[in-house]
Image (cartoon, rainbow, N blue to C red; front, top):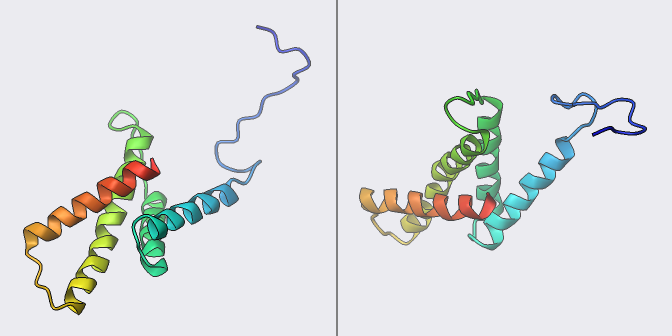
Length: 121
């Protein structure tokens, strides 16, 4: 296959030529909207989940021989949700003076993270 008229092809793997930061911000805004509208997180909680996800991205060390990048990002998202959303649930229970057994707490973490991650990815 000959590319007629093509003089060069650029690969921008580190955002030096095209800044994709705006697209990343837009994606985070959309996730916040989904967390608020579908999962009834307040804005603070939704932002906390996204902040935790972004912090995990910054610390990310990807080894393609162990896990594909998509699975790694899903793992980051699940962890961020688990670390954040249980807090909201427990605050509600505390406000209603409901004692939550640990096995229920674990189940809530798993169900919330699975639902949100499947929606996002």
